[in-house]
Image 1 (cartoon, rainbow, N blue to C red):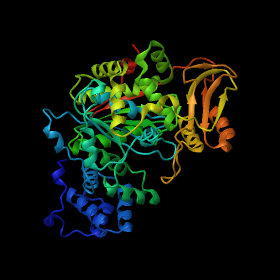
Image 2 (cartoon, one colour):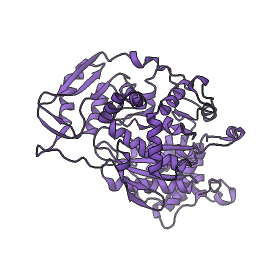
Image 3 (cartoon, rainbow, N blue to C red):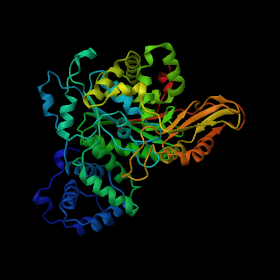
Image 4 (cartoon, helix red, strand yellow):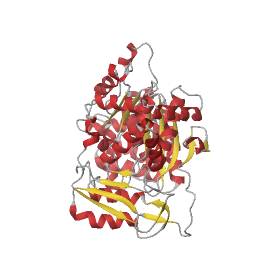
Length: 491
C-alpha cells in the first residue's frame, strides 16, 4: 500500500460518522477503505470519536477480522498519528546506506538485539532500532540497555536520525556514521496505538490478529526502514504457544509490511527454554558482551558456544537475512558465514562500544558491576539429561526477583535475575549446581530456589534426547519453507 493512499480528503470522508464506521465493520459486508480508517483514527485522536465508540469498532474487528489491506491501512493510520522518521539528513552522504531493522515478538532471555544490531551495522548497514521495556514474563531490550550506567534511550524522531549520523570515533579504527542505535519510542511515535492498546487491554480485544499486527508493525514502519526481518516466537515462553498461531501472525505482519512498502521476511523460532544462559537485565548485557568478545581466545569461544549456542544461532540467522536484504550477501547462508566472521573478529564488539558511547553509556563498569545484595545457589535433586528449562516459569520468577515488572509503572532491579550453569541437552547428577539466583529481595529467595529447580525437565527414559530445532521456518510474502539450521552450527 502506498502511504499516500491514507488520506483525509473531504470528498471521500464528508459523509462519514463514527456510527457508520462501526456499523460497516459490524455487518462486514465489504471492507473499509483506507480513507475510512484514516478518518476514524484521526477523529479519535481529535476527540471526536469517543472511547466507547472506538471500543465498539475494536470489538467488531475482533469478531470479524480485517483484510490484509485494511490491516495495512490501520497500521499506516497509526503511524501518521505521530512523528515519523525523517531520513533527509542522510541525503548529504555520498551513498545512502540500506536501513534494515528487526522485531521480535518477545521471549525469556531474548537479548538478541544487543548483539544483532551492532553486528549488522558493522557491515555498513543502518540499524534504526526502536525497542520496548519488559512487562510480565518477557524482558525488555530497553531495560537491559539502561542497566549500563548513563545509557540514554529517550530521543525524538529527529534526534534519533541525528544520533545515527554520529561519526565513528577515530580511536575505534573506523570511519563514517555509527549507523546503529537502540532507543525507546518517544511519546510522539504512534500515539494512536498507545491509546487504542489501552482500550484493548481492558476490553478483551488484545487477541485479534489484525489488531496485534497493526500495533506491532506501526512502531517499526514509523522508522521508515527499507526492510525488516521478524523473529516470531512460539512455545511456553512466547505469547503464542503453538506454531500455527505464530505462522499466521508472521504472515499477517509480512503482508502489512509489504503493503506499506517495506520488504519484510520472518523466521519462526522456538521459545520453550530460556534463550542463552542468563535472565535479568545486567546479566543479559554481560552475556552479550562475552559473546561479542569471544574471538579474543579459544577458551572464550568454546565457553560461549557451550552456554549460549541457542542465542548465537538465532542471532546469526537474523543477521544473515538482514545482510541479504541489505544487499551485502546474495544468500542467507553467505550472510550467516559473513556474520560469524564479524562476530569472531571483534567488529561487532567495536560497533557495540560505539553505540553505547554515542548514547552516553559507560562500559568501564563491565568488570566491577555491583552484585545484587542477595544470592542463592540451586542444586539438582536428581540425575539425568536436561530436556528443557520452562521459560514461562523462569520469566515469572524473574518478576518475583525484581528483574521484571507486573505493571508499566514499576521499576526493575538491574542486578537481579538467574544465571544457569547447565543447559538443555546436558547431563547432570544429583547435587550438581544448576543455577544461581540474584535479587535485592531476601524474602523471595527460598521460593525462587524451589521454583527454579522445578522448572528443569529431564528425560523420562534416562537417555539423551535430541533437542528440537530452534529456528523452524523462514517466510517471505510468497512462501514458507522449513529452515535448515545446519549452517548455524559452530564451524
